[in-house]
Image 1 (cartoon, rainbow, N blue to C red):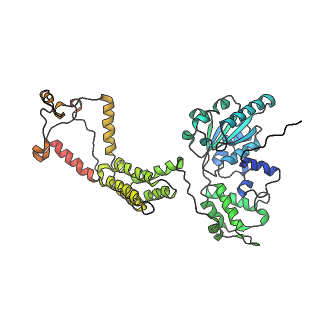
Image 2: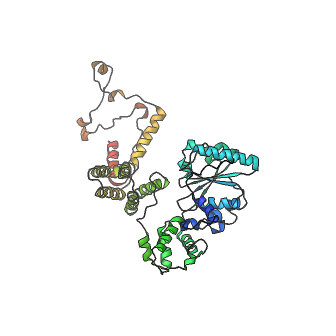
Image 3: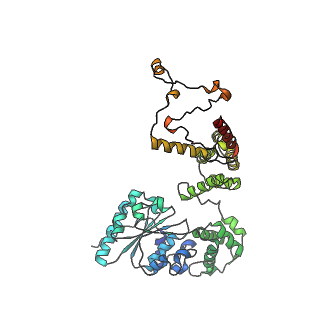
Amino acid sequence: MARRAAPDTRQPTLLDAAARRGRGDALGAPLADRMRPRSLDEVVGQDALLAPGKLLSHAISGDRLPSLILWGPPGSGKTTLAHVVSRLTKNEFVPFSAVLGGVAEVRQIVEQARERRAYQGRGTTLFVDEIHRFNKAQQDAFLPHVEDGTITLIGATTENPSFAVNAALLSRCKVFRLEALEPTALERLLGRALHDEERGLGARKLDADPELLAAIARTARGDARRALNLLEACVALLEPGQNRLGIALLERAREADTLLYDKAGEEHYNVVSALIKSLRGSDPDAAIYWLMRMLEAGDDPLFVLRRLIIFASEDIGNADPRGLEIAVAADAAFRRVGMPEGLYPIAHACLYLASSPKSNSVGKAFSAARALIHERGALPVPMKLRNAVTGLMKSEGYGKDYRYPHDEAEHHAAGESYLPDEIVGTRFYEPSDQGLEKQIAQRLEALKKR
């Protein structure tokens, strides 16, 4: 008696949906799914990778695909390219989600790939969506099978592969970076969806205001899936018998925008970097913009405040010591009042720090001192600087010849040195000519001359 196949318990993927279209059960599938490109010619917005003669398009069309990592923001076409590969190459194409699957399933796929190559002479392309969700130890499971050619790996990730992919695995893959789609590319895609009678909305004979398509393209922020979902939502709001899509529909269709931001991912660090560089560049307008990008996206205000406190010493220091006071006060005020009123002290500190004179002398001073300590080791403390807390210590010369500055003119022991004898005269702190530090430099120079 023939055995019944075990039921498929996998979560359906977009590639599964693509296969269903061939069986005629695409009715009700989302527009973004139906419009997924079937050939390289239908892919929009990635000409730098897919124009004729480019390495990736040549590899796909020639069915000579290496193992590769597709890196790009959501909706830029990573899964789309995987779909195209599944149609244009001869390898068995196996989609796999790092969110839903595990290493045990990978081992099973690899064993099937090994048998397929041995008995059918056919290769296997394994598409791992969100490969960054596997930790680097789990990614090791792919490594020997990529090396020996059992599988051709295509990994898709929104995270920087330098941080998200095991270095050994990354070295065996070609990385292709996909960019967020430009509004003009999204408008072409929307127009195609409106007029495509087979997969799109063409059968409904809809007429769309050009400003609507432009507005959807801007709102989608480079994400093709989001653009098509917004268009489909606008169509769903039409009254029976209507076929005109106007700009007013977009406001009704659009839910509260979620910012392109991942508190654990690369975009988080990109925005943090933009905030710090704007503060350092003394641009309060840019600084407050990036600050609010972080907070509106749901970042932890205490993380932001910590960065402001660090900045106050790292990039302002003694050019305006009040900067650190204000940053610390903002942190204390926020902890006391919470949100939303806590935005005031955070913004207050941000704008003050951006507008303050800048100096990195504090960091340069401690870095220079630390470097010399590592180079010369723990040099002995001069006897005059040691406390003579016992009679024996005093008899040994502890504290001998120490000059008490408050007993001398201007409360300064002119000509005295306080460094170990071997490095007397070394300068670590070089005040800048910015803000209060200019006055500090003048005072130190006057004391030195005495």
